[in-house]
Amino acid sequence: MPEQTADNTTPLCIWQQNLNNSPTAQASLLNNPHIADWDLIAIQEPHISFLCNTSANHHWHVLYPTLHYTQPQSKT
Image 1 (tube, rainbow, N blue to C red):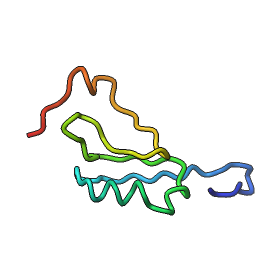
Image 2 (image 1 turned 90 degrees about the vertical axis):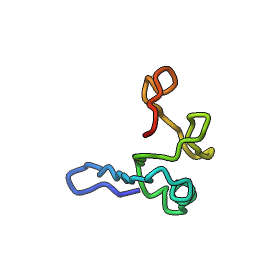
Image 3 (image 1 turned 135 degrees about the vertical axis):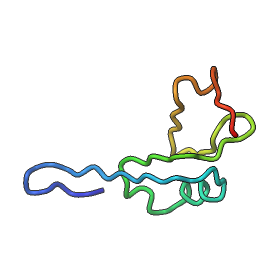
Image 4 (image 1 turned 90 degrees about the horizontal axis):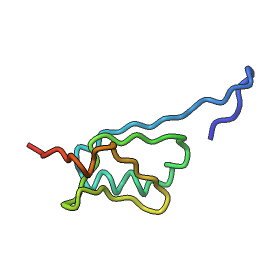
């Protein structure tokens, strides 16, 4: 985590990555040993299973859009 700067603020470190629906890329990101260096991770196009869920481990909190289960979008 970043240390405080001279003006008494702490920078927010954000990692954003498009996984292109790849389960391999997602597993690599989820198990990266340096992932704790980031405050917020935003995953775009995660791998979604046939049950309409993404994969995660106990270190992650998955957030879905409000209508994820009630109005799923079909993939083209």
